[in-house]
Amino acid sequence: MSLAPERKKHLDALCNKFRVDVLEALYGIQSGHPGGSLSVCEILTALYFEEMSVDAADPQKPDRDRLVLCKGHAAPMLYRVLAEKGFFPASEMKTLRRLNTRLQGHPSTTHTPGIDLSTGPLGTGLSAALGMALGLRLSGYKSKVYAILGDGDVNEGTVWEACMSATKFKADNLIAIHDWNRVQLDGRSNDIMPQGDMEAKFKAFGWRTLACDGHDLNALVDTIDKAKAYPDGRPVVILADTVKGKGVSFMEGQNTWHGKALGEADYKKAVAELSSSKAGE
Image (cartoon, rainbow, N blue to C red; front, top):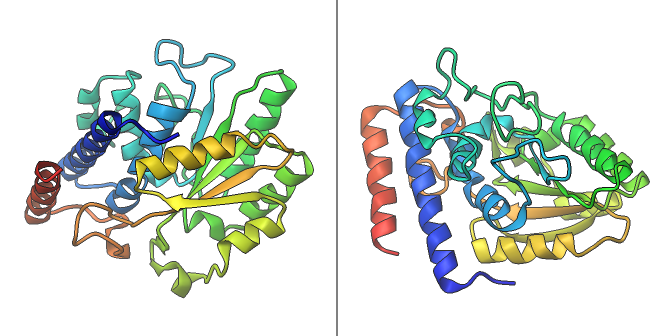
């Protein structure tokens, strides 16, 4: 079901704010990953504010939904969304990647409320998400596990081993969302490791596949709703068409902004663009 107009307007405004706040935190520490953080913004917003059953007052609730950020370098955006949900104060974003912070460079279950899996090394997240999904099923819970994949992530063989296993064990409570911006650390995915027909690949491994615009909140909510409505013994993957560095013109589609620090001029230009976008809503 599509979002009510006022609800969509509110969430769109939140996404814009999240982008500004993440860039502010990355500029402040002069480190981190802006491109992939901006790319995954709407996906995380749709999940945490519309789709997932989580409770900041009870982060370890046994029957909660789980989220695994397989592309762990996008942690800044996950942190900002978790802060908005009340897991910790938004002011902690100023401590990102600093000594003794709870907001490590990559997600850490031992440091940060709301993190379900420590991630960083690409290729490991989907296997762990599958284990979570099977464990929840054994416990009798109806919870869902969401795994957010990245372009560099799906180059790893362990991802496809997990795909085979998820089909074998009929993990229909596992929903993968591919933040498919087609760019990774060293360049465009088709130049680094051509991925071919991604939908056909997942189908060949027995997954149900859906696709949507990964920056359209209505499309995301509708598609995630469809994914949740398929308890037919097959895992589901959503191919979310996204743009690396979304919202900042000089970052969009550029691998150079995968892990590049913002200088003062770039930071001011980025914030000005995002502020102008907000004013034009």
